[in-house]
Amino acid sequence: MNEKMMKEGMEIIDAHFKGEGVSRRDAMKMFGAGGAAMLLGSGVPTQAQASSSAKGKILIVGGGLAGMATAAKLTNTLDNPDITILEPGASSTSYQPGQTLVGAGLWTNEDTEYKRDDFIPSGAKLIKESAVEFDPDNNTVKTSGGQTIKYDFLVVAAGVKLDFSRIKGLGITDTITSRGDDSAVRKIVGQNGIASIYFGNGGTDTWTQMQKFIADAKSGKKVKGVFTHPNTPIKCGGAPKKIMYLTDARLREAGARDNADLTFYPNGSAMFGVPEYHNAIQKQFTERDMKWNYRHNLIAVDPKNKVATFNRHWKEKGAWDEDLEEYGIDLKSKEVEVPYDFLHITPPMIAAEEIAKSPLGSTKGWVPVKKETLQHVKYKNVFALGDIAAVPMGKTGGSARKQYAVLVENLISVMEGKEPTAKYGGYTVCPLITSIGTVMLAEFDWSKKPTPSFPFDPTQERWMWWLLKVYALKPMTQYGMLSGRA
Ligand SMILES: Cc1cc2nc3c(=O)[nH]c(=O)nc-3n(C[C@H](O)[C@H](O)[C@H](O)COP(=O)(O)OP(=O)(O)OC[C@H]3O[C@@H](n4cnc5c(N)ncnc54)[C@H](O)[C@@H]3O)c2cc1C
Image 1 (spheres, rainbow, N blue to C red):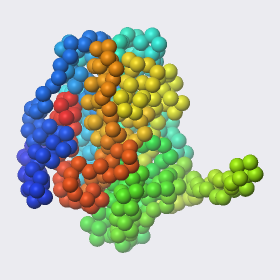
Image 2 (tube, helix red, strand yellow; image 1 turned 120 degrees about the vertical axis):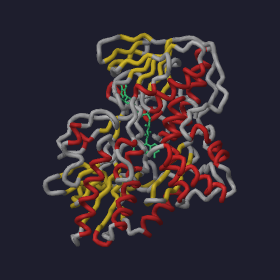
Image 3 (cartoon, rainbow, N blue to C red; image 1 turned 60 degrees about the vertical axis):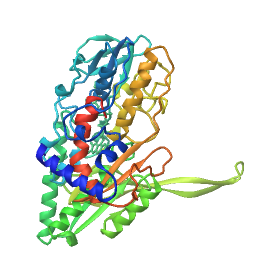
Image 4 (cartoon, rainbow, N blue to C red; image 1 turned 90 degrees about the horizontal axis):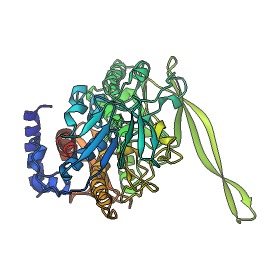
């Protein structure tokens, strides 16, 4: 997507917003994007930046979206910033939401690829290594290259790891990140009908596998598409469904939909945690003849015979408990084999092992922070944000966009010897692609209620949200958030 396309897209968005009685500038203000100039890629700051003379050595672990946005805003705000970023991945700032569009052949991988080194804020020091050991009692971190870094303040923004090793039969032993080296996984996921948009090259491979699936359906063969959602927290909970909606759209475009059976197998028992969006999605699925089977967790794949094995689990009324004077609940499960022609895997996701085993991580590895201030529950000079933070909802870029401003304000308060008072309200957003050309903009927060930024019914699929998704969100992220200004 070049600047000309983006400008044209903006004009179309303008026309739409005007039709709805909202100017684009107002619309983007509602989104907190800082206005149209930034959206058009000029990077012109539109918000006055507060400044602080607070001092201290800040270490940021993880230079992906959340870490780099935090580094940029700290640089904009502190008079004398002393910031070190630890990030091993050369493409860490790439635009992960675009991988869904690559998976359906709408973008190429190049459209999503951004170089980490282009986003290092001026004056910040980058160490191209990983943190391997954390000693928060002595304020030190050891790196993969053997350095020991001393800090005054630590920001943990290490994202999630994709753990395909939990699925038997794939022969994968290592965890990977979404934009790191994916060669170990790509040998099997991306071949022979198996696909996943969750890692960098996975988008391109998904499109290759999807096209074969569609060609088979077009040739008259009856084919089965299976889409999974694991039993761990995942980033962008909408993406497993988005790729299914896009498969449906591509099959229809090819005139081959009648030959394909598409079924979603999520571990959970709802389409979405917010009832209004759950109901809307079930309706959309029914209208498109897309099926679903709740409470199915993918545990094994037989790539040779194209069979996926799920753990199907459910609850049954148990025996009467004399003491509690109520019936117990028995957890039941059994293995279910499902043949597939196209299998889209959303992998189990975990916190980085080095954090899980450190004093900073919770038993499950996520970094326990106070959900509103993002300050570590035990170490007052440590903060965490983005996908690694143990906050109740929303491992999305949209959440990180709200979090990093709160974190910077609170970190600077602590640096100035004050209490942190800025609060993250749990906002997150999922632009749920429902077809080529439509998106349902699901915004919500901890209240589990829709929190629309715009005065329209948020459960409706709209073309203007598609335009926002395809044309505006990437520049908002790359030029707004990663420069610490939106
Ligand atoms: C397919 C897909 C679709 C998505 N769609 C959307 C969407 O539509 N909307 C939306 O808002 N969000 C979406 N997201 C989610 C969004 O991309 C993430 O929530 C966001 O990138 C989180 O930012 P982060 O900085 O926490 O993690 P990341 O951006 O993943 O960065 C974490 C970084 O930490 C580094 N790291 C890890 N361990 C260490 C260590 N020990 N030492 C040093 N560095 C380390 C990694 O190399 C990585 O670069 C999607 C993601 C995917 C994969």
